[in-house]
Length: 365
Image (cartoon, rainbow, N blue to C red; front, side, top):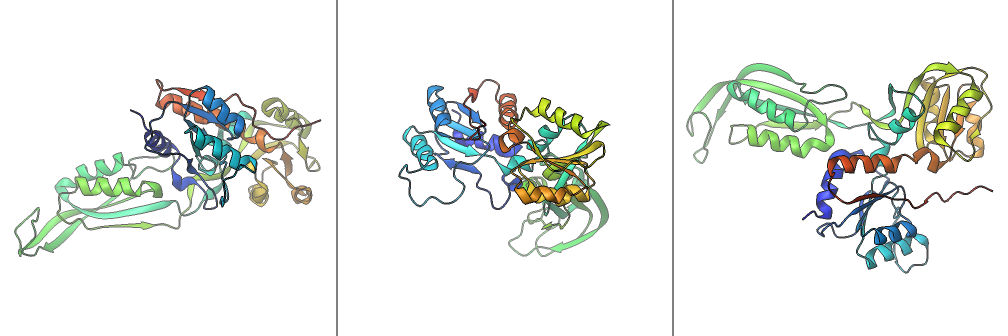
């Protein structure tokens, strides 16, 4: 039996809760995690039509990008579209799980897909997420250091960016004495022991901390393991909001705007005054990204593509960067396919349906 919790565990391994922003409301929003999952419907948003589609497709779990519940609900009476969705999902025993900023910050998430659609294959994070790294420092008998280090690497320690199996080791002498109740790996209770030890230091993404600690404790031979895990101030360059990179060839501004029309198919493009130079370095941030204008300018982007820019924010481009608003839905339209493709890869024999319901609330006359 595949439970909803089993599915959540698979998704959490791909897009960990630690990737989400503090303000966000992600994870399981509606439903019992212990219930059996009959099928998954993947959608960008969870509106009533999506719940109806889940009922028709016999899917009792909706995995969506945007959370239908964002702020607290004090009553559920069906008075607005949010409460109606929640009521209908509960009546039909349908769970709702949202990812949102977990995928905004994901190294292969919303913004990676968006910038690659525009022809940029080598990009980096525009705003790295702070405080995403932890460090383990421990001491192991020299003859066991290889086994312990292998176990830590399997748990994800020592893997950052394009590198894995990273560590620092230092040889030294350790000393300990157990009391009467101890069962030491070396020596006897009340006996002072000196032993050749290896100091192991590894760094890892913060969400892996429980796995790394478990790997250490299960592979280490000592009864009581001496270790430290602490957070670093370093930013995690592979995790964060937005992407920035360069086109293979520069192009004039009108040609670049036409490229956006072709690749993203927006109903219209709003942009700041043209800057009078060719476009090569571009920054993107799917969804509401006005907060990143200054970062795009600081990193010398020629153009910054995002959504939901307000009137006065278009002035902020000045002559430094071309600000381009393609629409909220349009900037995130590829996200449901990203989720669907991952789930199909992980569970090829499970019932997973890509929603056909139109969820873009913005219409044009």
